[in-house]
Length: 449
Ligand code: PMP
Image (tube, rainbow, N blue to C red; front, side, top):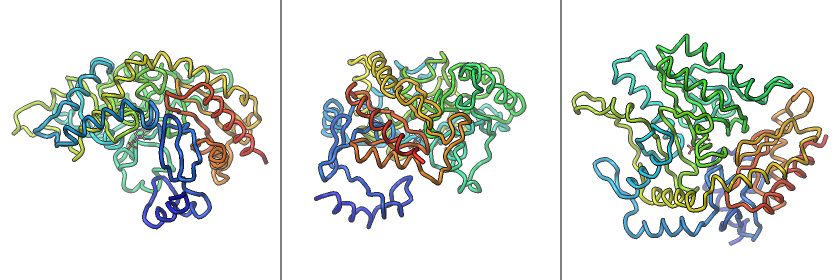
């Protein structure tokens, strides 16, 4: 089997995610045969460094021996059983381990099987909580512009990226939208912190005006990942937590992308010293192995559903693969690696290495900003550095960087005009430099004329 043979078969039966399939008339698909550590290899023997952790899921490398062994072991015992009326040790153990590391008072885990489904469950859970308390007027959600929470209709409705949302607008519930504290738009000389404080005002006003109708505010803490890796200061989260308390509104933290060390702490919320009422987790949860998600919440929220059956207060949300045993075993092994290898602390030197490696491009005439939050670095390509005017999207400059990367052993998948790294934590300093060198050359070429 070689690349071309598999590509031909693929294109006759598959429909790929987030893809204009016609692009593949000139943009070759890359069929991957195997992965090891940060490296992927295609059927023609070409290698690619997975600089984006396969859509931000992989933490400890492809084909990780520890996670492999855990799944193999679990598969001999039990692959899956429904989680309604039944239970299994991997689900219980994983929930126990998560409760140990989640910000207090999150202490209850509801499993779903992917990020979007976790967001759906979180929205329903919040609404249903208020209803169970007799507050039937609370039916709305507040979300930020430029946010992303998934592709199913509820998750899309609370998202704010037009590219994914606009077409489906007539199908979506109404959401109250507040301008994002995205610090790319701070004034010259203004700090991220000051800008984030200033940008909290519209959120406060929205809460003041609508809190009686609002179930929850949903946000991605610190980094709006799919929204071009835009970042804001932790003070915003702190202010939001206080305001949600004041106005009797839940705070839902979507840590699907930011969780498990991506922002430099285990969970991004820790950096603001806050805890949400509901936290959504997925992606890195299983180390990038299997689809699994958790909606973590407080005992207070849980108790509002706990009653005699006839009161019809139960949360009847379910997915067939809820708490899949193989996925839970991968997640338990992943959490064990965090502990054994002291990952969060050791990542600090990788974080510094990543920044040092991209600094040579900071003065490039088409780089508006290099921003970093922990293990995420983003480089914003612009047409005009002084005004931050962006390149027209139709020019697909990011795609040029993507193509250049592939020719140079690098899987970079820019978001629009933003080139970013979100690598597995097993990346070596030498590989970080390689990743940065390719990105720098790619950006230089992609922004010429
Ligand atoms: N929320 C955030 C913050 C995400 O980044 C994503 C995925 N990119 C999702 C939700 C949706 O997760 P999934 O793709 O597993 O449905």
